[in-house]
Image (cartoon, rainbow, N blue to C red; front, top):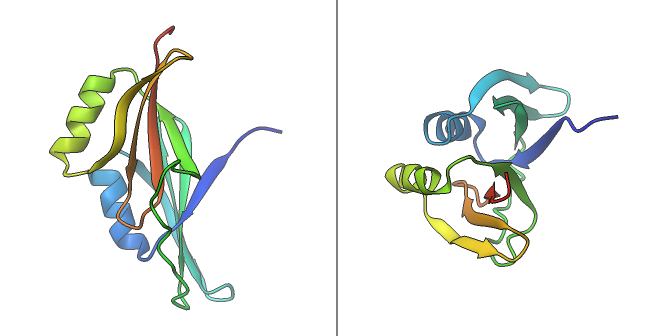
Length: 127
């Protein structure tokens, strides 16, 4: 068994694809729709990490509350935190918290997508 992907519910798959590909650098792998399940979904990838975006076509979407401790969240490791934070700001993405240095030897930053799904970017200092 191995990890495959994380999934976020979104209000509009097409708008979310635009956000993830243009602002975060994800690559679109596929988009599909299930008439039977009444969902539209997309798979994206960045450096081998996959993310599924799922839209309930019946309109059942409630934006999650964005609040500390920012859970659940999707975490990706970055090589250069300063450059990553600069890119987020240049793309108009609000930083919720960080960059914060932690005792365990990491620096982290939290932000949310337009639907309130939380991301963490982490830089391990011992790598």
